[in-house]
Figure 1 (cartoon, rainbow, N blue to C red):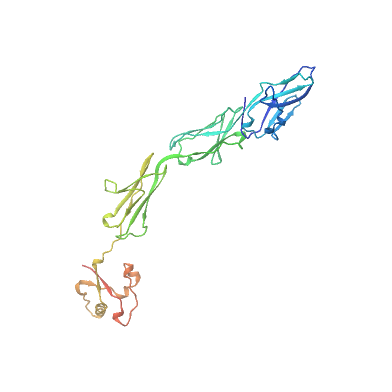
Figure 2: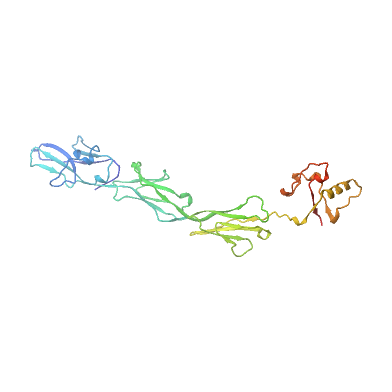
Length: 345
């Protein structure tokens, strides 16, 4: 039996010896001959344009088949016709041809750290000493002579990819690529905070957890340092109205069927500002205080308030955007903006 790859080009050969009193009138190759049906392959519609027959100087008769398919499977025999009608010969049994394709087999599940073996298989044994070439994502990996196996040592996520194999001298006929996916627990866990700018009390704050895992992590838990139980679950954790009691260090834990891992802790806090220590004064009160700057003795405003210098009321000195005032002076004191005093008790 001869086993060949689908799409390959092959040669089969045969020879014969006849009595001296007979003269050969015709020789040809046929396939799957029967008593009532022996067809010359050169006239067979399936083989048209893909078959050649030639003879060398030693009398060997060759059959050359191109781009073989599964239709080519069968028993190939040499037929000899002579000058005697009743003296016809058939080389039977002839050469049985089997057509196969390469098929890559991998384990159903491969977990990080394991050492799986990949197999390049056929439905029949290829003739001769077969050498295989292995590919990952179309690039050659290695060669193993006389073996249809490839061992991957201690795999990691870097080994994920599309693998295929080919017979070394027929690299144009590789197996269909098979996707190899390495499974691993969550890693590279990180937490992001929204808004990313400064948090003010009353803001809505959302923490999001991301991880690299295969399969993707489905379970997420949120923890606050110095608290024994989880404070939330899900890939995102939200605080609708942030206040000082929410301040602290938070981290998330991601989990899939292969394990779990936690992120580094991130600090979440607000920049609070209390309006209870501010008093609004009128422009006339401010004008009186401005006049006092020319006296030798500086007296504090009533109720122990320290006035803000009008010259310092430019935007770069303001502590809150909604308290910005014009730096321009006007002749009419009543047209000037009110001044705010800060308690220094």
